[in-house]
Image 1 (cartoon, rainbow, N blue to C red):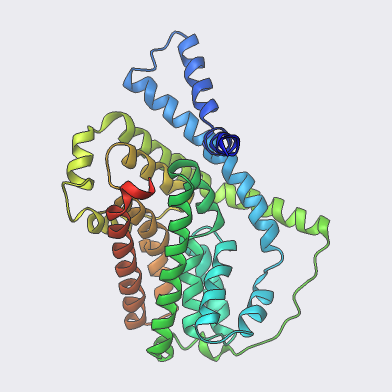
Image 2 (image 1 turned 30 degrees about the vertical axis):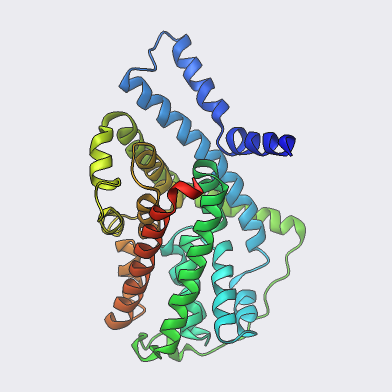
Length: 337
């Protein structure tokens, strides 16, 4: 049993966490005559380490997930979802969201396509909530920083929010609040293409390159902010604003996260820096959920597809779920971390 634990710890710390890389960069800076205890040099070490680590994980994850996605192209996903009804359909839609695009702005066109194809509105909203919030990339990245328990629970509660949110929208019969240019499109059955293995690998490579080009600027910005927080903002400030001293920290983090547009790869470095500076776990996870699910640019895009009342309901359901989850993580932080 101890051998398994050693292997698992090695996997988390050295494979996912890449602690060796941080030490290598620190040793390189020290060998160059630089003092890594200096805040400027420490910021450089943090920045270089996180950018390289996240870039390696990003490219690997996008390639693997895109290969999986090649089996679940929109046409096939629509056929799969069409076989289920009720909460089962919401559950399958939420699960499909874990192997689809990495940010809400990429998920909205798929949501529009599914809705136009005649899938129930609640089912498509379960997909829309799940897709940016709990993709497989977030699971691995969260594991590399916060550990397996936190990552798995995060994904489970994210799926629960997606399932419940979609079910509520379904029960309230909000179809009349979808813009008219979407609903009349009807359902057109298109036979999904069958890829060879080589074509799947090519598709995965192209998706990896395309997604990397889109998200890399956000990685640089996110890691830059993380380096600033990690080395320059006093721990007392973080604890006071986002720690146990502020009972409204979860709500504040959620409200701060909503206007920001970034994907999970650009958001996690900020959350990591906040957490290790004393912010509560649930507070930083609420921040991640708010940024990835409710970013202002995404809501502006979604407004073109749905009317204000349905948009407001979507925001209210997601916000309530994020806040509740945040407080629950804060309550049980000592148990799961």
